[in-house]
Length: 530
Image 1 (cartoon, rainbow, N blue to C red):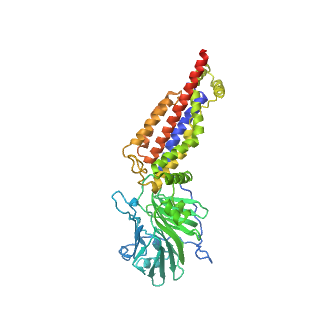
Image 2: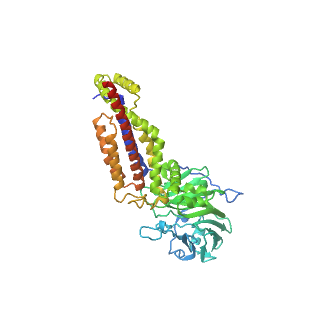
Image 3: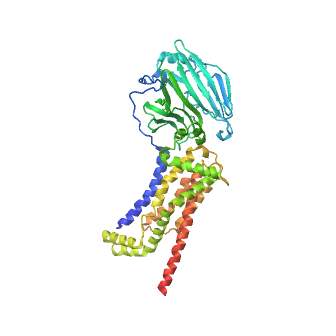
């Protein structure tokens, strides 16, 4: 059957909308890309301003984890640090062995405090590894001592603890200054120049799922973010002049940062190809550090530039301003669910001129349907002439057959930006909406919002002028509400809420436009009968 180019265009646009939606979900789910990173040959250590040296490769002796049978009893605690916000312990190897947040919103489903130090990895924050195998082996067998066994940090104070390790030919000092909210400064001093590596530890494994990115993140001196996902690190990588080096899961992170004297970072891989972060030094190391939630207000209170620790994946460039605006609304409204509703309404207002023009065009196409059918019948043997006649008809009546899909295409990046915001921002974790929704970051427990979303989508189809002539296309469109309903069942409730409210706006707008067209149609019919 001969089809005009116009019909083919409509088919392609419809398929593009559906396929692009599915593509973005599948791609975002499985293949969030990271920027390629070349391996530098040399790396400069900025903490020694008088010279630069080449960073050695991490040797197998350096990479190996502690063997408890050969080393010291690393499970022994030598110091405890506590504030109203957190509770931590340091072990005999001078590492942070446990870190608990006290606030109830960070507790698990059983109401228990969560240890942010990974229990599935032997790598702990502040662990030192030396390039020389002999020193490294001795270091793992020699315990640290602390100048204070217990610290309590008041709300407006900071306190320092000094850890010391005396090796046969080397003295190691770690000076740690803890602040009330879990951030701290770390300084390492060696009695003589000896190349070493220090790590912020493995990523927390509290919130790890297939929907979000987890692994390591490095912000370099050119403000480029490099992301290394778990199970996807092929080779060791060196990054010179890094501002931030973070090991993170969905909601939490452990990281080093220094914006004044950037760090030299090496991303190593473990036996599962997961990233491990090490900062390289040879005498003195100094950096800010943090263990805790990737909560914007906390990070900004430390340094506004730490916003980059929160990674939204591929849609970061849209998701970040989207969250900033959503957070702005929440400050005035006081509820994240209603903030999402207001955000949706604002987006609809911004897109209103385009959406209105699209709906007007769709109604015009409906009125032109008999004339379009007549042209197809008259020129069915001459597709080229048929297209010319169709274009003249569209031009004469101000109709655009492609305008119906453009508003949907524009909303796809907005949709995915909100999708990433709801998945990655801890502020929305356990954030309730009124009625039955107690956590906007997880699926609707009763499937009410997905059903309402599908129902409004179906109703919108009923009152929207159908200009699709191809029966296969028409069937696909009829099944879309059902497909989308099942598609949204496992999506975060906040995302489904956004799409449901968006559908309500489209439904109301289409109903009003239909009424306007019906009134004009009756008016024209009345004029004809006079």
